[in-house]
Length: 177
Ligand code: IMP
Ligand code: MG
Image (cartoon, rainbow, N blue to C red; front, top):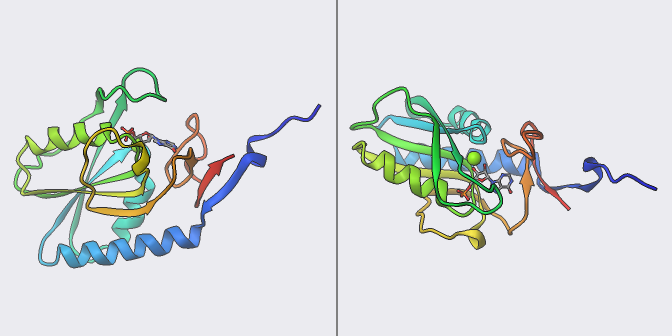
């Protein structure tokens, strides 16, 4: 009897080179769009942490950071649309040009909730950047300003994305076959 290990089922979907090139492009575009302004980056923990730091290193405008941790209630595979704040922001976002950085947008429920909540705190502007987007899975309307890659409806890991809290540190986007 053979035991199929996780490593044997893991395939590269987007290579490290491709991810780095895309983040460089996003950084250049965002720096251009925010010329003369400051960006207040909001990293959505934990998945967004890798994209946030890699993106921030490529921004040429002044940047400040804050972190927020959220979790979806209930069954993880069927997003309920209800979101729990595990860690709120440290600082006020009133009057700031805020850019939320996410690893992936799936159903869109998490971001829909976050956008509505943060908009009520009166930022000067509020935009959204995600490395990955699974448009087929969207159940709620979310306008994404900056997208790295649109991907098919497959479960992916790496670059912040986990499978049971592991594999976030893979430097590429992998898919479990
Ligand atoms: P949404 O509210 O359905 O858009 O949920 C987005 C969250 O689900 C992401 O921030 C991830 O934490 C998680 N997620 C969605 N798709 C994947 C995946 O393919 N791999 C790992 N985590 C995922
Ligand atoms: Mg996430």
